[in-house]
Structure formats: C-alpha cells, structure tokens
Length: 491
Image 1 (tube, one colour):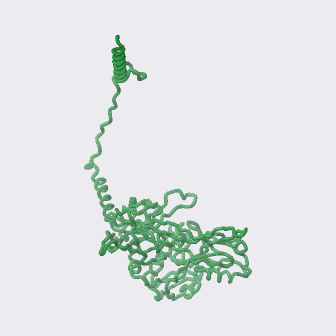
Image 2 (cartoon, rainbow, N blue to C red):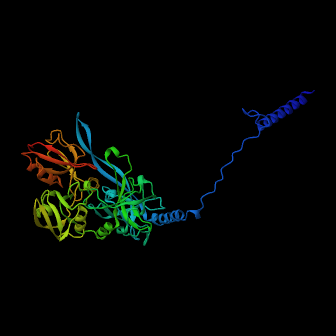
Image 3 (tube, rainbow, N blue to C red):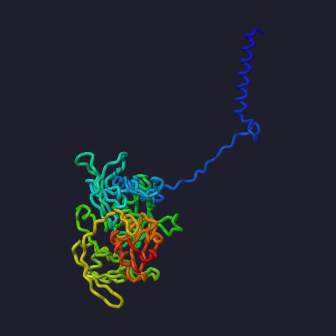
C-alpha cells in the first residue's frame, strides 16, 4: 500500500471511531447506574386548575383599582434633593497645641414632595429642605434630570414647606393632587403612601389607617397613623385614599423604645384638614403667625394608664417675655377653658390657636391649685429663629432646628442644642455635646423656665448662679430628665 493510500485509510478509521464514540454517548451507556436500553426518565409537571379571575371578583377588582390609583397619583409625586452646608467643630494642631476650629461641610438630603396645583406648587416637610433652602431641586415622575425649585414659605411649627417648581417653558402645567377630606377616614380604611424612600423614586406602599388622631406628645399636630411602610425619604410624599385624593402628608416614622428600635415602626402623616388650615398662609408669605410661648402636657398625667381620656392641659414651661408669661401663666397651671369652650387636650388647644392670628386675645380659664382664675393672653408674631451658636458659661449652644424639635415633639420654637463644652466651663460635668436643653428649673423643681435663645439660657442661669438648680434635658423617644448644676462663678 502506498504512503498516500495508507494516510487515507488511517483518516477514515479515525473518523469512524469518532462517530462510534458519539453514538455511544447518545445512548448514555457511560452514565453510572443506567443499563443499556433503559429509557431516560421524564418529569410530569402538575397541571392543577388555576384560580380564574372570575372566581375572585373582589381581589381582581381591587388589583385593578389599586393599579389605577397608583397610575393617576404617581405623576403628582416628586423627589426632592437638597444640598446642605453647615459648620462642624474640628480638632486641629496649630504650633504644637490642639484647639477647636469650625469647618464647613456639605451634606446631601433627599425627601419627597406632593404637587398640589397645576402651576407647580409643591407641599413637603420643612425638615426635608431645612438648611438647604438655597439649593432645592425636584425630579418629576418620568424625568431623569432634576429641576430647580424655590422655597415660597415655611411653617416651622407644623413642619411644612411650600416649594415652586421652575417651569421649562412658558405656561407649563403639572399634574396635581386633589386634597381630600381626612375627617371621613375611619380606622381600617385602605391607603397608599408614595415617595422616594432612600432615594428610590416612585415607590408605593400599601396599608390601612391604624389610628385617626395619634398624638405623640406633639403639641401642634394630631397625626394619621398608617401601617404603610415608611422609611427615610418618604417625608413630604402624599398619603392617598382609594379615590386618589391626598388625605395626608407623610411626615415621619415613629419607632419603639431603643431596645426595640429594629422593629417596624408606625407611619405618621399630617391630616389634609390640617394642611388646608395652613396652606393659605403658606401661599401668602408674610402672614403673622400666632405665638404663645408655653410648653404643655395633657392632664391628668399618664391618663392613658387608666384607659381614660385627657381632661385639660397642664403648663410645663413658660418662655421669658412671651405672651404666656405676660398673661400670668405659671408652672403647673391647668388650662381648662379657652374662649368659653372646654379644652380637652393639647391638640385641641393648639388647633384653636391656629384659628387665630397675631394680635388676637385668648380668654383662658385656668385652675391654680383649687382656685379657678381668668387670664387674657394676647398672641404675638412668632419670633424669628436663628441657629447661630453662642457661648454661655463656656457652653456653645444654638437654637434647635425645626426637625430637631419635631423629633422631641416640641411645638413652639424653644430649646437649645449643645455644640461644644469647654473643659474649664462650670457646666463641663453637667452638659455634653448633642444634648438638648429645654428648661432651667429651681433646685426643688417648683419653677421651670423654658429657654428659647442663648440669651434666655444665660439669663436663666444667672438667676440660679448663687443656688444652682436643674437643667431639663430632652431626648428623642425618651422622657425628659433633669441634671443638677452647681452654683456658678462668673460667665
């Protein structure tokens, strides 16, 4: 056989061997546990009858209705972004010695907003934009780029802010929500919360109304409580009913005690009835805001332990030179009647105050001990709030911002934040950074003065400089506590 024929024979033999191997693999004779000639197993899928839509008419209709409501409402919800700039203390080494200097930092914030008019007015929470009022941007549903928005006005006491979207063309119209009637809601009613939790735009969660008037020691707002999932970034978004009407503005999530902080909290929303009360004022900037200058609690204390309702309100702090002090209100006074009508709780009290304007006179009936007395309180304008820090007895303090007061459930613009405490301060062993100072009291606690500014804090301490006293500290989610301070020796 010639060499050429030999190579052809070997190639043909190799090709035939390869075909044989492929045939054996196809017959799966090399698989363990399988005998020649055995057929491969087949899986028979269960063919159960599905639940047809006609068998669940209510659920099918509810699915379609919730989808319809979401489609109608979502274009009216915006994502709100702000850029905050603030000063923070920093330890620096200058010439071999350490001392504290302030450094400016920038922080991004995100929240939600609800378009309430076709010309682009947006309602949100003040704490969403506070500190970044000059750099507010909103992103509309279906758009990728953000738009500039300007702050029209704010209501710090009720944690509300009104924004105006900058249009991209003349006469541009926006989809807007209709304000519903929160008074018609009942516990168990279905609601949806929409917004941008953690910056995740166009998020919707479902829940029910858990309580129609939840008070969390807040002296201005009685919230709608909902089981909708609420997370950071939801603030300012709408809470809507099954008609797609805005019945509340999602404001915050109430957590449990610290040891249960990982448990799911409750969503709280400002009712639309309250929104309507302040919306006209927000649209007309420059309105007078009524100011009382008093800290209140429901009376009797811990009434809920007896499964009873509150009967009146108790005075727990009076601000210096405020309308309350000028009217003669004192610590532990019980306010029972306002303008001839019984006052049953703190929400009732502040709801009626909101119906008045600066300059109006409130006729109060108070009980001091066993005696009933009459008092006339003339409302004034809410003082301008400045968060500029000042040093008082070696302690650097500033006024609480509205979102901080909101966490502490404070109504009036009162309270101070401790930014720094000098080692040589006479209060160095009493106060520390991040404490919230609410009141200064006598050693026996018989008199307590609410502090609203660093100057008021200094004056209150000077009055106790010889005897010392107590400073009332507030912490979010916890009861206020008193810390004793010694006699002071100089500023």
